Length: 185
Image 1 (cartoon, one colour):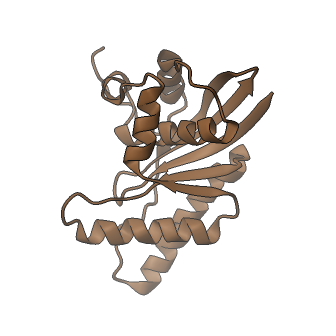
Image 2: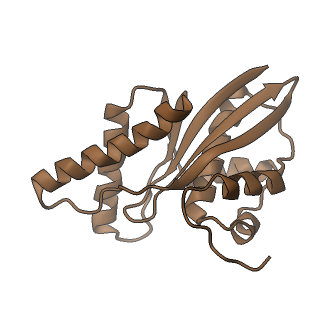
């Protein structure tokens, strides 16, 4: 049996989801468990005041590091930010946060385009729009979870199979550090 714990980051200057997921591969069968997830409390939101930026950057990195060290994560995956239209400050803020993650955190990491991981997850039978509607978490938390799952699939070289979406959604909701959304099911 092989196992890995991965942290997924879906970055944004205001809405920034993260998820810690454990993956196990036993005789070609993959099992996935969401350990913890939420919306980042300290994303970088401004670039103007140097001293304030330094403090915010420190808080940001401490929060990211706490998710890694608390759960002994072995890998970090983050979505590359690709703006649709002009996004000025958001592009700069996300670029700064990605650069800080890569510079500061000492574990293997990967950047991946949204289209890459979403297409792979779709091949595993996942309809993201349905998951977004069913989950009482923020979309960014769902994306962070699937980013981590994408990395787990690749690292463990898991053969394609149907994911247990009901189980993953329950895990995501029960381990969320962010307030759940009240949705009718």
